[in-house]
Image (cartoon, rainbow, N blue to C red; front, side, top):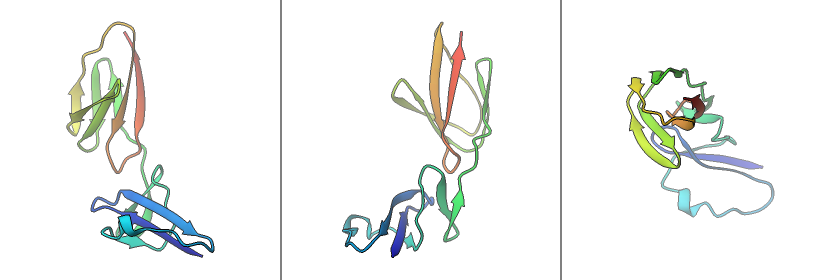
Length: 116
């Protein structure tokens, strides 16, 4: 049984499959490097030619400050993406419940909820 995981230059898994006796068309992914393993993009990435576990994102919210952002990434608030730098970031919240998602690859995505 053939297994392949295609990935981009950052190690982000683009496509992964296991060929169990059937032919799969992977022509759309041939421009990407691959490894012979079955990867889970939600939990893993490719590092130095091997599958590696994505680490928990260490960033925490303290009041209206998002602290400890490990690498530059993206904040997703109500479906809109905003760039965020590594380090600490001050956020503006509306009264009520505020939810957002922090994406800092290769760290796992992390969801937050802040009530004002």
